[in-house]
Length: 248
Ligand SMILES: NC(=O)c1ccc[n+]([C@@H]2O[C@H](COP(=O)([O-])OP(=O)(O)OC[C@H]3O[C@@H](n4cnc5c(N)ncnc54)[C@H](O)[C@@H]3O)[C@@H](O)[C@H]2O)c1
Image (cartoon, rainbow, N blue to C red; front, side, top):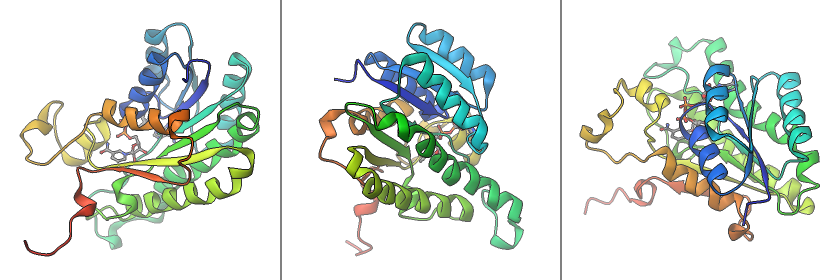
C-alpha cells in the first residue's frame, strides 16, 4: 500500500529511526534518511541500496534541516510521509536543581523544536501527496513521568500536544498526524540511560520492546490502513498505563 511513497525519516542512523527506515524500505517505500551522525546514516543508506539516500543534518538547525528535506524531495520527486524519530534523553537521574538551562534547552530543541521543524519544512511536499501522513516518536513519557528525567518528560508531553495541534491544523489538507508512545525500547538511548550492555535487557525483569516492533506501529500509522486515525497516540507499553492503583 505504501510502495509508491517517499518517506523522510529523522534520527534514522540508530535505534527506532533506523528500524523505521528499514521497515519502510522493506515495504517498497523510498526513504530519505536524516541524522546528525553522518557516518552511521550513510552506512545504513548504503546497506539499503536503491531507493535510499542519506542527508546529514541537525534537526535543531532550521536551515540545515530545510535543505535536507528539500534535497530528499528533489531527489525523489516529493515527500509523502514525514517520520520524526530524532530524540535525546538529556539529564537522567538528576534533581531539578542540578539541571542547567542549557541542558533543558538542548532536550527541548531536539525533541520538540526538531519535530516542529520537520513538519514545517515537509508540509509543502505533503500537501502534494496522495495519502500524506506524519508520524512522530513521542513516548509513554507523554503520559507518565519516569523519575529523574524532567526535561525529557516535559518534551514528550509537548510532542503529544504538538501532534494534536498539527492534526487539527493540517486536517484540511488531508495530512494525518499521529504519534507512537512506546515504553522502554532496546536501543542505544535506553541502554545508555540505564547502563545496560547490548543484550542485557533480557535479564532485567521488566518488559522491553524492540525497535522493529515500534517500526511496525509507525508503518501502520503511516499507511492508508489507518486512514480514519488522526491526532492520536498509539501507546505501546504492555498495558502499564491502563493499570489502576487499586490493590487487587
Ligand atoms: N529507546 C526508548 O526506550 C524510547 C522509548 C520511547 C520513545 N523513544 C523515542 O524514540 C526516538 C528514537 O530514540 P532511540 O531510542 O531510537 O534513540 P537512539 O539514540 O538510538 O537514536 C536517536 C537518533 O537521533 C539522532 N539525533 C539526536 N539528536 C539529533 C539532532 N539534533 N539532529 C539529528 N539527529 C539527531 C541520533 O544521532 C540517533 O541516530 C526518540 O525520540 C526517543 O525519545 C525512545
